Length: 392
Ligand code: HEC
Ligand code: HEC
Ligand code: HEC
Ligand code: HEC
Ligand code: HEC
Ligand code: HEC
Ligand code: HEC
Image (cartoon, rainbow, N blue to C red; front, side):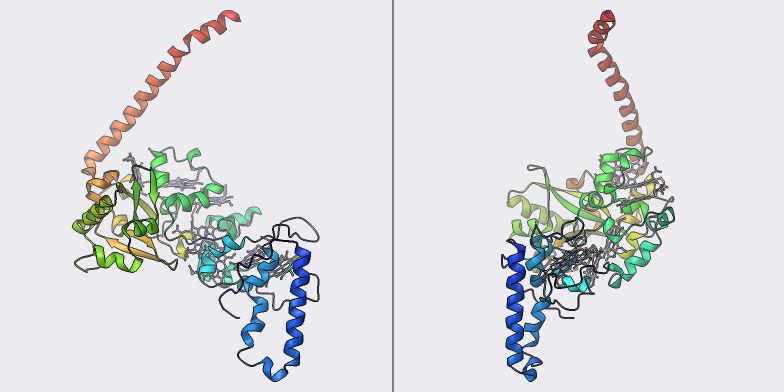
């Protein structure tokens, strides 16, 4: 299999008339074949020609036809369009995976035929490269439901052409793109106060996959614009390359951002006029085991998370995306969670007793508000209701 850069990826072809492109392609390939034949068989295997022959199978070749929004199957419906730009940004393209690495049964493109490859291709086996994920998934409630006649593929959750790198994704991006496609967590979890907060900052798999390693990602949140900054935004604001970040921040060079060093980072941001607070997200480590979603046995013990000693908070990191699309986890001293700018992070606000008191107050307060609110609505709507009664 040839792994090579994609020539002619964005050559702008493939957006026009499909038939015309077919013809052009076919003519081009015929010419190429003629030329190679006349050059003699010895040259054919000359190493400098090898890449030219490989050209027939690079992504650009497939996209010449498949980046056409109008391309459909002869029989049956369903678009055959693959968005080149979106594919370009995908995790697979970033790792040099080509069309034919997944559509592995296409051995060659034959332009003598209308369709240069078999019309019916074998289903793609994600497991050919992701065996560990497949094994973990086979162990989950989502595979067990196959006994009910429901078969879930990998791409029930992941996009097959446009899977984006997940390591730096926020809780919202991870859960909304996956679990929330099928589950509405607000319909259950009634034992959990502040559902919105928990679903925003605790990834579903953190509670639902008993085996997974958990850790804290610190996210920069801008109070002025009301949005999260991505890692690359932060680097851009500081004017640093990803390699320059740690040498600049971690002044004692111990590989961990200590509390004083963290405060300097905040100061640097403020000097750039960015008033960010840090939010702590509780995420599952990016590992195959994250696929082992189980029925029952999910985490519901408040103290597991809301105590200073929680084992979940051993790994605290800032996640920054590098220029090449890779991701760096920079370790941060967990003492940082006590910092004032992280006041949103509840557990460190005080002792456990204080915390539970607060929750008590919140719950009572919440119930009180509910009763008062109901009364207020009754009073406001009183006249309307009376009028209705009189009419009837
Ligand atoms: C000359 C145009 C052309 C090129 C080049 C081309 N395809 Fe296709 N492809 C088609 C057409 C047309 C169909 C629809 C066939 C049909 O009518 O069912 C198709 C169908 C497909 C399908 C769906 C098959 C199925 O079982 O439903 C896949 C997957 C596919 N192509 C992948 C590729 C890949 C990967 C490449 C590059 C190695 C490629 N194609 C190159 C024209 C092309
Ligand atoms: C990570 C694996 C992967 C890569 C890389 C990949 N495909 Fe696919 N492709 C799939 C899967 C999975 C399907 C769904 C049907 C199946 O299982 O074969 C699919 C379906 C298709 C289809 C049918 C229409 C559709 O969207 O369902 C076309 C056409 C296609 N691919 C073309 C391409 C082209 C062109 C490239 C390269 C730019 C490419 N694929 C790269 C996995 C991949
Ligand atoms: C029920 C939804 C779901 C299904 C189905 C699913 N995944 Fe995932 N996958 C996830 C989530 C969520 C993550 C992020 C892990 C985390 O939370 O840390 C992930 C992460 C990944 C990763 C990156 C982490 C790693 O293991 O390196 C890969 C690769 C992956 N999935 C491949 C697959 C494959 C292959 C399949 C099919 C066997 C599959 N996924 C099926 C939800 C799913
Ligand atoms: C030809 C090998 C190959 C095939 C087939 C393949 N992948 Fe991948 N995939 C990779 C490589 C290599 C990476 C990047 C390294 C990694 O994260 O494991 C990757 C990364 C991913 C990621 C992103 C993980 C992250 O780090 O954020 C997901 C999600 C994923 N693959 C899902 C799938 C799904 C779903 C399929 C089937 C449609 C599939 N892959 C088929 C090789 C493959
Ligand atoms: C494609 C749809 C789909 C997606 C996406 C999906 N699920 Fe499911 N999930 C199901 C189905 C179907 C069941 C089985 C329901 C049943 O048996 O009653 C299920 C069952 C479950 C159960 C067990 C429920 C019980 O009754 O105890 C949990 C927990 C769960 N899913 C969590 C998740 C999480 C976490 C994610 C995201 C990583 C996710 N699901 C993504 C469809 C989905
Ligand atoms: C703080 C931990 C926690 C978080 C976060 C969480 N869950 Fe749950 N979830 C539970 C517990 C505990 C149950 C009760 C059943 C059990 O023990 O599995 C449950 C039950 C469920 C069920 C079964 C519901 C039913 O009707 O019985 C589904 C489905 C589910 N969760 C999906 C999700 C999804 C999707 C997310 C992310 C948006 C999520 N959960 C986030 C702890 C959590
Ligand atoms: C899996 C870990 C986990 C579990 C279990 C959990 N929480 Fe949380 N909780 C969090 C995280 C993370 C946040 C969000 C912190 C933030 O806002 O930065 C949070 C937020 C909260 C908040 C809102 C704090 C605020 O500042 O608004 C309350 C109240 C709360 N939790 C109470 C509870 C109670 C009561 C339970 C048990 C029924 C519970 N939590 C179980 C992790 C958890």
